[in-house]
Image 1 (spheres, rainbow, N blue to C red):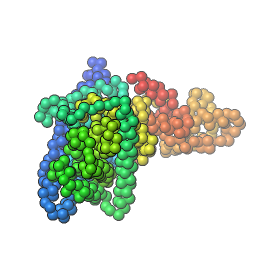
Image 2 (tube, rainbow, N blue to C red; image 1 turned 90 degrees about the vertical axis):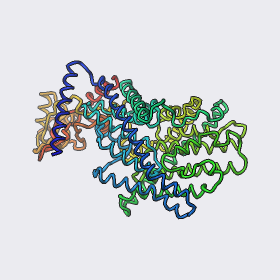
Image 3 (cartoon, rainbow, N blue to C red; image 1 turned 180 degrees about the vertical axis):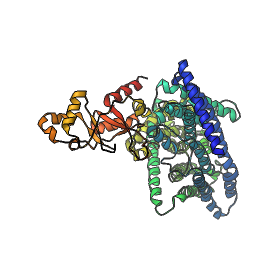
Image 4 (tube, rainbow, N blue to C red; image 1 turned 120 degrees about the horizontal axis):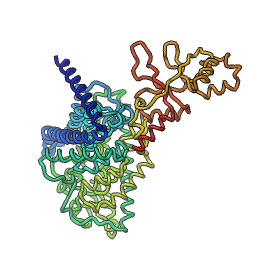
Length: 637
């Protein structure tokens, strides 16, 4: 009874959408104009889902994570430490159960890597169920203490919302990525309170398109999502997540500080390299371990091992009076997003109000910063690589703050005349590691400014972020988001040109009529047809209509030099079987790669779906000239 109702609802929505499109077309309303209205819808919906996601994470924290951790801290019985690995492990087990119940289909790539894969290879279509799956899975991971951040999950949720809105309203495949970018930008903007950084993230990391056509709807969605989220959270103005109005001495950046911030950028770049390499290594070990351990248990096992990192922090620093003075009881620094720890590490007052340390305090602070930096890298990799759900934004900020604070403390102690302040170095280090890890320096620079609301940070973060990004690019060459795609043989475009090719598919191009030849047909017949009708390339099909290959004009020219041999040769003897056909919904970047690989003037185009018992239908020929014409049209807007 429920299924017929859904079918009737679907038919009604489809009919309404078709009539609306026809009426708008008669009024002369272009789809580009509709994108602006859709951006309003996506922005409001993303603001709502961001608030809902935040409430879900807080719910798991309030009723599960915090009570157990506080009880562990309150007791002096050392076996209670055994509970720490169990806290995130149970969250990992609940995550796997949820995925098994919600969606039994195999997901090739999780998180933002999966969204990027859909943008480049799956016609930019995302399942609406992805939003629900990610919301619950990430709430279980982060809420139970898993070392991850909420930013990437909410970007995935927003992307799924944008794709769903585009699907319901019948947006074309060409413009669907823009709505996905609207959702991602809205999610990042709302969760960080950073609308400009959200826009840049969508354009720099996801779409790689800085055209005005893309910018306008993404800006609208970012603003609507942020204001909706703030209104649902209690109203008031948008504040920076790490804004500290009374943070001690002013942030002063002078010419003499240049080499120190270049050094900071290099250190942060190396930390990003360690983070990336460590993540990939643990991911590889997880795949190998699945031969002996059921995949069902891998996220729980990884979460349990990340809990061991929390034990290490407590064993090393729990009974240390210096650290007890700075960290509240009941909090494990490397668990969850780590925002309370970041706030302390970037606060100059935490280091002694900018005054020099002597003796034990310097050593203890330095040991703590180095320990949490390295253990955060390990804990995050153990949480996410085996299958946990969460983002790398918050861990990258944490790693940068700890590494930058440690370097600043060393420089302040051994070069007291340099004017270096550890809190400032921790603040700049946050953005530098993030810029290198996601290979998006512009996003990281603006994000750090919006998080701190401190304009004095702009010059040093610009220098450190670019330095760190160059180090990561030289030693790794990919971001944490693009590495999984590289392993599948997919390279993301570096500019608007490739992005344009990824937005357009073959079904949007004009195809030429495809002359057909049989493999047993004499070449003399083909030459006569070519001379009579001006045909250059022939598609060769067998008697059942199956594609066998291509007979090109270059092959025919070879025969034309010796026309007496033509009656003695058959098409099958000159047939090029190495040239594959193009599918109707292949994107143009895939087609361009095929043209470059096979050096032909035309490619056969086949339908994606074959009829029962029949091969895919031949639809026509796609020429290089048509491909380049559409490419130029896309670049011209």
